[in-house]
Amino acid sequence: MKRKTESPEVPAAGEGKRGEQGHLGYLLRQAGGAMRNRMERALAEYRVTQAQFVVLTMIGAYPGLSNADLARLAVLTPQTVNGIVANLKRSGAIASRPHPVHGRIQQLSLTAKGTKTLARCKLRVQGVESEIAAGLTAEQERTIRQWLVRMAVDHSDTKRKSA
Image 1: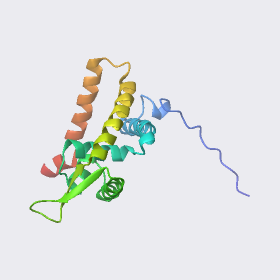
Image 2: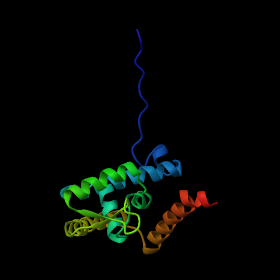
Image 3: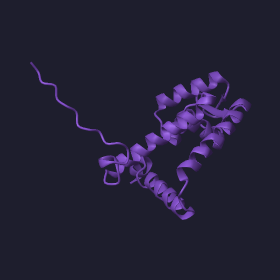
Image 4: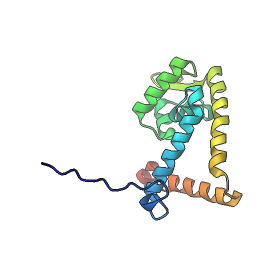
């Protein structure tokens, strides 16, 4: 007869290896997961996922993107972007048109519905961001933003490929 082994007690967020003594990479992942969950809840009323919000934001900021461009900017796989783009087209939030030179490449843009949806979602996301920045001084927030950008720039795939 096999003896059932007891599982160790799993620490709550902020405790043990999930706290300040944890690996920095894990802490970033833990924080990213918490942020993603908060954004998903904030955007649920509009039936927009966090990944769809990122895609809408990037298309709104850079109209004419291709799916491949979008995958790189949104840090998503091409397959994931293809699914998101198909769903957003079906919902009427985005439209595509052939690239003027490379006809097989589709350029993406927001529709009026997509622009309205993005504006509503941005208000919700700004609320979440205000909540997570609560208690930080302007200098602390600036330092965190600079560090996050530096991490992305210094460790991006494009920088490694050119080195």
